[in-house]
Image (tube, rainbow over all chains, first blue to last red; front, side, top):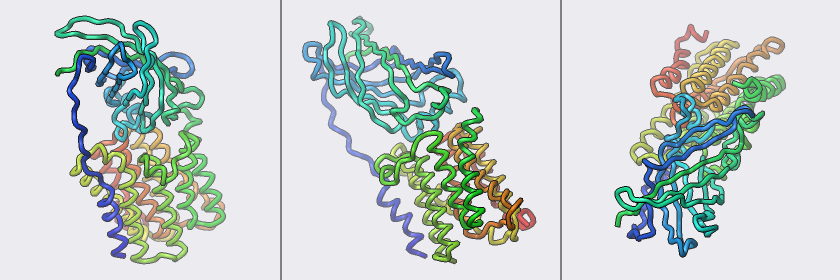
Amino acid sequence: MKTLLLLPVAFALFTIPGHGDHAAAVPPGDNDWVVDGVHSSVVFRIKHANASWFQGTFDKVEGQITLDPSKPEAGSVTLTIPVDSIDTNDKKRDEHVKGPDFFNSKENPSIAFASTKIAKKGDTQFDVTGDLQMAGKKKSITMTVEKTGEGEMMGKVVGWMTTFTIKRSDFGINYALDKGTLGDEVTLMVALETKQAKK
Amino acid sequence: MDPVRILKGVLPAIGLALLLVSFGGARLLSLAAAAGPFVAYVLLMAWPAWPHELWAAPNGMEWLLWALVAAALVTVLEYARLVRGRSAAGLCVAVACVSTWLVLRKMVTNWSLSEAWWYVGSGALIVALSALGHRAVLRRAPAGVRPAFLFTVVLSVDAVVVVTLGSSLLLGQLCGAVAAALGAAVGTTLWRRPFALAVADGTWLGIAHALFVLAGVHIGYLGWPAAGCVLAVPLLGLVPRLVG
């Protein structure tokens, strides 16, 4: 009896994790860019009831881009989108979408992308392949990213844009798929403004 | 909400309960109450991962389904008199605590160490007390269908609260499936011999009741005040006249 009662305590002692070590920071170079969340946007659209396109946004996005145009294969892109920043223009619906029926944000608080391969496609376009992690599942995707311009705004800024489509069922988000209540395909439009990383 | 989706949630549980209780009586009800939500999850989402897969990639809601299976097996063991008395109560507490930890395990990585200890510890205590409380209620309750009917109402209220205040239709549907299984078992009294819950049923009832509410809080968006009220409702059963 006593052994049985001690079992869960011993179990928890063995499995509650400690805090991991942090990797050593690498000093940024001229080709290192940081996403300016204030001037970036992530819009998604999904079909509702097999009829209309519904659009919503994620109001926060963070990330870094390292890209030498003459040597794109050596570059990297990492993006993080907090799921709690989703905005569907209805607070109750936001909670439902963030909840376990869809994103399960308390278990999986962010959507993350990390590139594994970058290849130049045209003068201003790059094919970026990487792992997209969402709702606890990871899948490799490829998107075409376009450099939309360069400018000055308290330092040099560069704009990027990509539009790509994923299937939510690939990430285990299967709720309300039947009868097309909510479509499987979700199109994401990501427009980023990046500023040079501080040295 | 789509009526077809509601039926996908409750019909498997009702069918399984009618089948198992008709053939095996109350001793098999816990299996129907565990298998019902399992089948509903398959119909509404996907096949849940196996425990060894969940260990590598945790998912609280899928762990909850396996917790119901574990609670059902403990109940069946007690019905079969393979465990009894204090051993049965100890096993019930162990399953309650480990289940709570597994359901919350993924979120632990997003919590600080002190938060993890607090949430997992208090959660395990709540689920264990709920299971022991349900056993105590059933020990005092007179034989008859009334306690089962009242627990059906309790689980139905859990489901409604999780849907409306917890913002999770799926979690509510799974809880509703457990309520539907119990309700269907109560319904068998219309054509079968009298149906009554035993003390052993307190294990799966208490674990299911508390784990669904706890999941509503931690995985969904259910607030603690509402959760506290819902969690306390079955303890009213300790007042003899309510279950008598």
